[in-house]
Length: 630
Image (tube, rainbow, N blue to C red; front, side, top):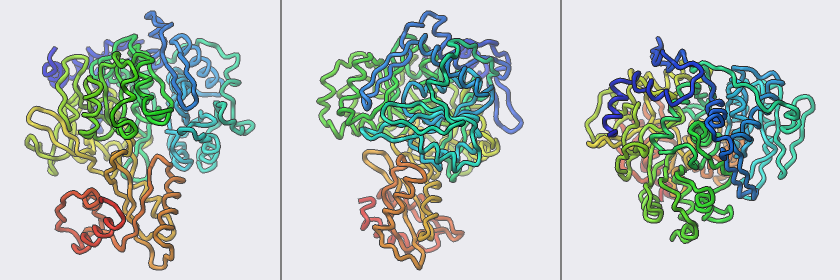
């Protein structure tokens, strides 16, 4: 079928289209009520359907004869460990953990926070929650205790699952002390903590609260029935950075999620049962949920579960070694990873040592794909290098060529055309559609397809305010860009205060709160500055209090340490520039968009509402003297 016909059917007949796509899912009770509009402007998919996501990801594969197929290839160059786990073995591990969790009182609807490195047990924990109908919330292991405590307070979990440590290149990062500190900071106190002890570090255990991963599973049954769930029951909460300090708890339902990620695996990524798929990410991010754990397992694929980095583990040929070893058909990573590889191996000599004939497609997303990285990959791999676009909120791709149907040719700088189900448009400030090629706000006409979140945990009004209010009748993506005359979508950047560091979305507002809390800081602005390797990095512009006596170097060192302690190293906050004042409107709003353009040497037009025009050349000089934008 032609892309145009397939896409048009999804837009003109969404209920019929998504009823057909739902047939790929093994329901306990097939839905008849496909799309239900809600009074608040949101909607629900498959409201009367019943299923279990763990059953779809594990049991169904066994029933279809794939029990001895490898489900997870665990490859950990940082620990020199490799393990292959079949679907039969995965089911046994999931059931035993689920039984142990049930013994601790975890039931349908309870929340479980998972704070773990990239080890197979992390996937087992997610699937065990799904089997019980418990709602998991995976928190990326790079977050500091304060950030973990914020998420614990919001999700109010009955249980926390963690490990004794993670590995960063050769450095052991102990997780348990971070969890202990988070639980001291949190007002909500989970009843139990299950700890996976790794050989690299032994965690201290608190009597009466902490349970050993292996000991608590001893004697537990290796086969328990999955809990029958409504399609609209939540599967997980995943916190994403908002423009304020409080992260948004994105809620993913079971039914729409299963249909959406299955559709994406088949049509966007062109993966079939028995083939090997590799998404290079972490389970703490949306990619890890959708396309390391649930999507590929629901699709009957073998998944590479990778713990390591693209370079120095042991060298910049690690990615190519993994592709050869597991016969990877398609892989997905952020452009940052390939920029790091190219920096270490500019001629691609390490790539030539490996047989990469199994690789048919390479997908990138999460940040802008620059032309140099695109050509470096395309010229050497001789496979399609596919830039595509989606968000934590959508859970699966919004724009991409359909590699499993009728692939549109890629166009450098574009994330390709809308995926079926997403009626992507560009609007101006007044909410009117713009002409082809004109910049504006990227939106999608409602209803959004299955799998896209329809609520924020504990705060449904925040979902409506964040995504549905600015342009009534549309989902507001928060991204700006344009669509050309052929329907190709070009993303030019965020229209809010979210920074994209190595494909990870982080709130500059949250960093500003952290920086502002320093006793010597009067006010500040944290802006995203273009970076050759990471895409963007944060830079703080700081106005000191009149009585501050710190010199600029000491001030920077203290602020860098504070952000690292309060938010985490993943923020990559390494620059703080002391300025005399910040550009503002007459109403007192800091002109962050102009500051970003100054930092990136881009042209700008000062708004008529600016309070003092002379500050712009002044702050430009300060930035240049500090090396920002040079």
